Image 1 (cartoon, rainbow, N blue to C red):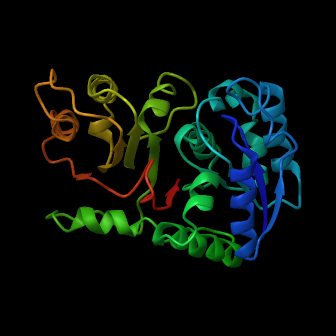
Image 2 (tube, rainbow, N blue to C red):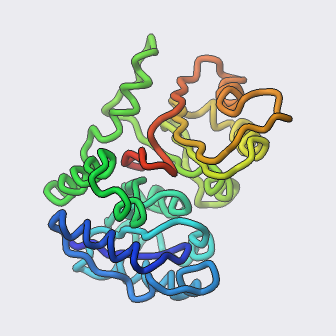
Image 3 (spheres, one colour):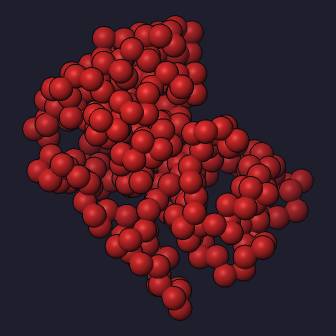
Length: 285
């Protein structure tokens, strides 16, 4: 399978990309690097035009099967409206990544093309034998063979939810949407936000104050999202240290806001998704 490495957001040390590329090659894939993927332009991996050009080139290149982001950071929002939805749809190629790549997962979702919320180059290079990485390798091998992601890939999380439900969620007909909570909040009110109706929403975040997480959760509540979704899955909130001035602990507050108007909403806390080594692949869409 041919994988194109792209950097639509923050800049990254070339040695991390090189190490990640070697891991992907060891899995049997052919790997090419976007011509601007190793650039640095302030905090970004190149100018807006350079980062956009790499995405468009990967989508139009008939030899590319999968786009794989090097890292998150910030920057995808700047180029979001430069990627034609019809091009994503006609290309039918998934993108792999998480964090700021949440923006692109939402765009791919709008185009009706599945994508993969999963580790990027830094993770691959630092711990290539971790069980999360091994799972990712299996997912990509399945995609190479079947041209689709494993239909049961998200069952890990749904089965954990269903263990405590009197009316289990249909694991075979459930769509996942979500990603980084902070990044996702930037999409609310735009044409690129997810359609949350009857979906499972998964969220994670890093280095955010509990009051900011409270604000973003309150926003979802005011939007009516928690009344629309089938369930909420909360992954890692890495580096989101407890605030002694907040009257409720972070996780308790997240659950409370989500279920305030819907006490029966299924909620799974502590799922292995997000900015830690335990970051299992999630199929979006």
